[in-house]
Amino acid sequence: MQLQSFGAACTVTGSMHLLTLDMPGGQRRVLVDCGMFQGGDEMEARNHEPFPFDPAELDAVLLTHAHLDHIGRLPLLVSRGFRGEVHCTAPTAALAETVLLDSARLQTDGYRSDIRRARRQGHEDQVRPPLYEEADVHRTLALLRPHLTFGQTEKIAGVRVTPERAGHILGSAYLLLDTPDARLLMSGDLGNRESGLQLDFTPPPAVDAVVLETTYANRTHRPWAQTLEEFRDALRDSIRAGGKILIPSFAIERAQVILHTLKELMDSGEVPRIPVFMDSPMATRATNEYFEFGDELIPRVRDALQAGEDPFRPSTLHVVPTSAESQRLNKYDGPAIIMAGNGMMTGGRIQHHLKHHLWKPSTNLIIVSYQSPSSLGGRIVTGADTVRIMGEEIAVRAQVHTIGGFSAHADQDDLLAFLSTAGKPHVWLVHGETAVMDAFRPVLEAHGLKGDIVPDRQTVDLLGPGFPTGRPPGLVVEGSAEHAARVTGGE
Ligand SMILES: [Zn+2]
Image 1 (cartoon, rainbow, N blue to C red):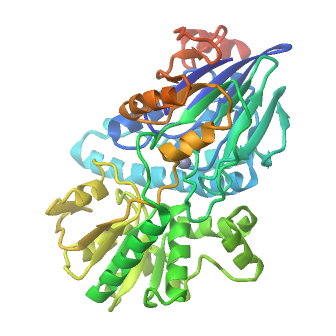
Image 2 (cartoon, rainbow, N blue to C red; image 1 turned 180 degrees about the horizontal axis):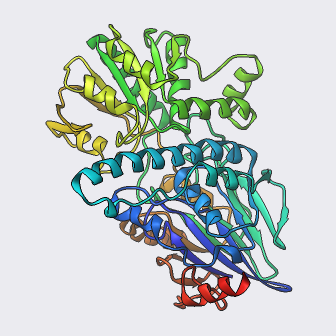
Image 3 (cartoon, protein in one colour; image 1 turned 180 degrees about the vertical axis):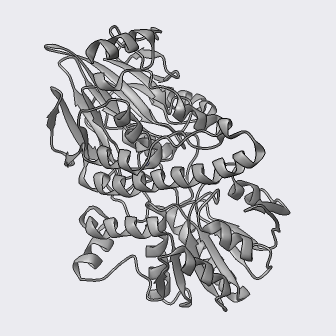
């Protein structure tokens, strides 16, 4: 039972884990997630590297959930030769369509504008082409098998696979894999047990090894009730200021949590009813899937849906479909809440709202998601006086509120609670910064568990103590001479 992590090893994006499993009749190669690296040029350059294995030789791909950093390179895997099936839950398949089409569109649009600028400067050779286009996404969507159901075991490439609820976003699963030797748990991303919409993760059974995400393994989230109070107070203060209230939000999960919270706060009279503009077509599409798969959500939301209500629609909600209408919003007078993507403000419609309102003292910017330090949002949060937006220097005079407790990720307490039913597995740490994982290992030890950090791209024997380096036998790297010989030989 060997693992190589080619993404989300000692980092939090690009999740891609190759399992080589000894099964009767031979080894099986199963890829768990195929995510995109995000967060700055150096990280994103890794998306363009060849796969460290031949995509055509994989027996199957399993998806834990539809976030871009877990599925964003799937179309690339397909365009480079993968022809097998991609197994996931039905909500994950539905969200994957929205996420991958948006990703293809962003890449093609970004490429067009980058190449125009580069031509003017005479170095178009430095612009990287898009990883894939819409046609590649459609070829990928045709391979999705949305048959995984929580608690039900399926035989995939001869391996028994049981998905269980991970409680992170709609449709998110952790995966139990049974081989004749052992039972392995691949955690994917695990949810915050206090999230606004998702049911808690299902306590896992005893397993032999766990590959565990550790995004927030070194901290404890603020209690949910306190987060809601902070959000309510920020809204009240902002409404008093009389200007625009900007809420940058990620399209999946965060946008729906915020819409639902706004509805509850306005319906209960805790926050005055002012217009809410949802200015993100992707978030609007994703919200439709939350509506569609409402049975998966917490009882309060599920019951509202069954009673014919829309828990994601504050009575003052306006959906902004086109970018022309989005721009017309700049001329809208009076207080209003504008929700737009992307969550870190590095692109998307939020940028032109910031350009038009960030310099006004009456504007309030309410930040509800993580901001990486290098992002536009990160610079605003750390107190920049001015920021560059769409080629223009803009003064930061808006009030900035940061609400930290809306996280969709498990914190340290959640992770320990998760492990508490898993027996005495060897815990392999992924999907976290090295410092965070280093801090978490002694905590695991104090709970009687051995935790090791999965090294980037090296082979790990999940049941053994050591770190054998190199590749599992028979693994051919895409683009290598051996691979080229094999590919040409096969044609
Ligand atoms: Zn995720």
